[in-house]
Image 1 (cartoon, protein in one colour):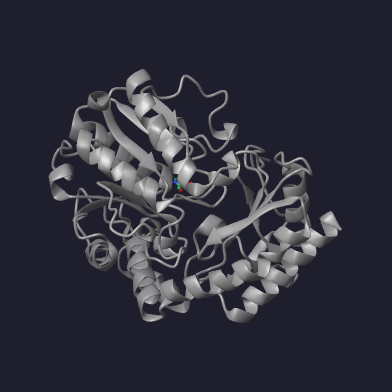
Image 2 (image 1 turned 90 degrees about the vertical axis):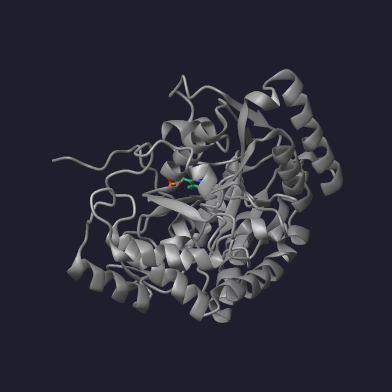
Length: 418
Ligand code: PMP
């Protein structure tokens, strides 16, 4: 009798039977308030009736219509809906199945478009577990360690996380931009650098917002040197930040290549890579995509997800409800020295736990996670040191659910830190 490999960790002890909206139920009917949303995936809540209906209808029509053999309408419908929210310049896209694959594809596209080998990624960034995606990831050793040699040509630059450095945001941005210049003089010349790859809001790295001035600085350097700017919107995209894409928090900065997944399809596995047509045209026909990319059921669910987000004004809801959650959690920072920072944007909210002398405290974060489960609240840990608890409710979370979630998380912190 085979069993599930222990390589898969489990942050809760819940065996889910069914789920609806912001709630997960086990077989005995216990209800858990879900502020983990499948790691930021179930954007319209669990089993939104419209998404369920769209998927059901599509399952009965055609499930798999392989996109390089025949085309199908749901893929074009999804492209149509994505066009309404994507930056105008990103007018060409194709689909894959996961965030990691989208990142792989973006790296390959950037190398092809520039004819250059090197990628500059940022410390604390998370981009996935496949080989290239793990090679540009530095949010934790678990996806890198022991798998080497990883893909070559990757250079990590300091990420402007002001809390970590203990500096002002302006100082941190200045330092990190200066470090890029240093990297250009010591590790990879601009003319051999294909891309900067960055999350506009770091996800697994700890829910850290990249300062707009840094994204602007990257855009300028990219333009100056013909380097592709890749924004990985896999986790922070699709409305979580109160803007449709997290890079829109830095008004006017657009990427050359963008990856998206998770929240774009409410839990159906589909990701996308978008770029201007001129960049897409540099890739050999057949060099991208795969068997399942753009699956008809996933695409139908994705198109309906985007319609629901628009019709129910869920981006605004995420902004408003997220700010409310932030306000309710903020006092924890003053009450407990071990809460180093309560931060976030939109529905991406984090508490970073530290020791009394300011060092990362992963054991505290883990204890809070467990205590939250006892309160019937599901949250997640993250951060390079594993010392951050993140809460990421669905975009359509209600005001009452936000209050209840904040109450339960506060009770969990109190029970651990007393
Ligand atoms: N990029 C980002 C920003 C992510 O947060 C993740 C997943 N946490 C990935 C890529 C990888 O996505 P997947 O797990 O779907 O491969």
